[in-house]
Amino acid sequence: MAEGLGDQPGGIFGLVELIDEHYEAVEADLLDRGWRLSEVGGSFSWRDLLVMVRRFQRDPETATARAVHGERWSVTDQLLAALIDLLQIGNWQRAGKKHAPKPKPFQRPWEKPRGRKFGSKPIALSKFNDWWESKRQKRG
Image 1: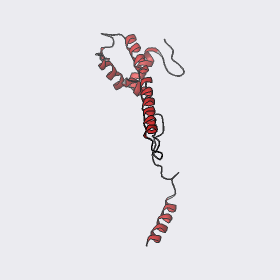
Image 2: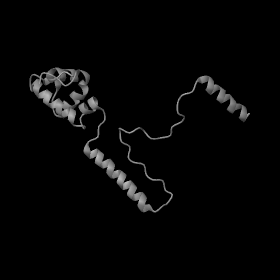
Image 3: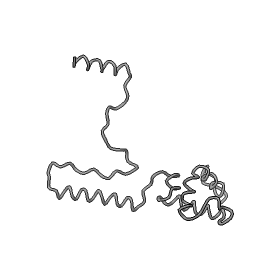
Image 4: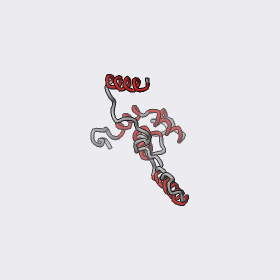
């Protein structure tokens, strides 16, 4: 595979670029399997390394996949989160408390964080100072 996809170099050139950018992650995954990056050309070939790194990128449990793609959930992770949500809803329903708040779903990494949000957008410092002074005068 001499050419890459889109504007990305392919084959060994793409591998070298990926290693330059994510050296520690690739090295960590190799160390987990009893290999070292310094052994390329000796114990295993560049082609072997290319095959391993391609596999590392597809497995969300590897440091390489997290470095390249960010945090991703495996199918198992997603099923476990769905199971937690179902258990919480079932327990809430069986509790029989009419005014109990409905449980919130388990937070997924791709969702925006939940929580209290204050205000909508920043205000100018002069407007804030005017507002602050008006509140101070009401108290005093």
